Length: 339
Image (cartoon, rainbow, N blue to C red; front, side, top):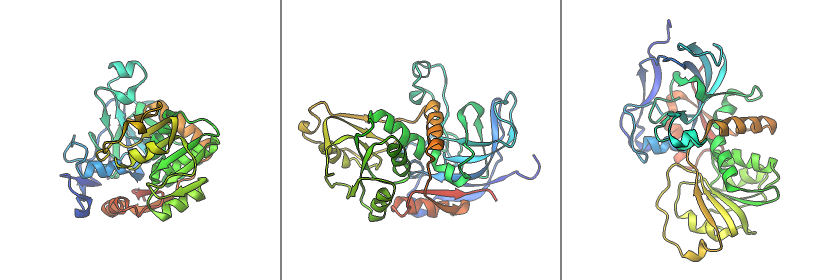
């Protein structure tokens, strides 16, 4: 492999608040592709709120040490045995769902996002805050050519999960849809929603994020707990704050659907049954299927989606995470890894 061992990576040795800058930029053993896997030379990696939950220990640790990051764009450098789906040099994306068992009842029924024995990129296996990573060839994506690397990175989680949220909301053309929180996922999802002729209302605490929502076509934007000027057919809660749930329920029309789009959320306070009555529904989104990813990337290329990115060098991953935690990112934070 000459010249690429060891690799540089931002490594989490023990979960800690991001204010303590817990990621260590250091040498790390070069990953080796097993059968059916590929070695990817990373160019960019998106920074996701899920990374915060991993790094701060809000998600129970699965691997230690671990390299976070699951919005990976890079180029195939080496093929493991039996790997032939992509040629060497192909540009690919690696997302959160690293592998499933393929045999459990959920995988067999087409719900591999609920697999009983999954692994996740940057959580239970090493991820993209590094110069190189490995991934199973069957769980990576071809990236549409019109997306530059740094533009493509946020599509791999923020984009795919936002897309799944839209689908599960059941929203129809001309429907009224609320977004609670307007970060990386929402700023991609609104572009899909507008493409589908859906009216979007954005509730978010930061004035800059409200302006971005309006710039991207929202009909109205206001504070997190502001009541939108129309009853909503559906709402997606992207912010990991349980206290939003009662406010979002209050904004729904009868029969409306609320989708919780995060992997972690602070406790949801009790609320009167009247908020849920009249056949309102709350549902969560867990992970994604590969079909979600393929379908989303096709739609993203048709629109085409344009992501708003703020770039950070790989070695400044701690700074990017602190900015994300403090709502100081407009759009999506992305680490620049390759030259």
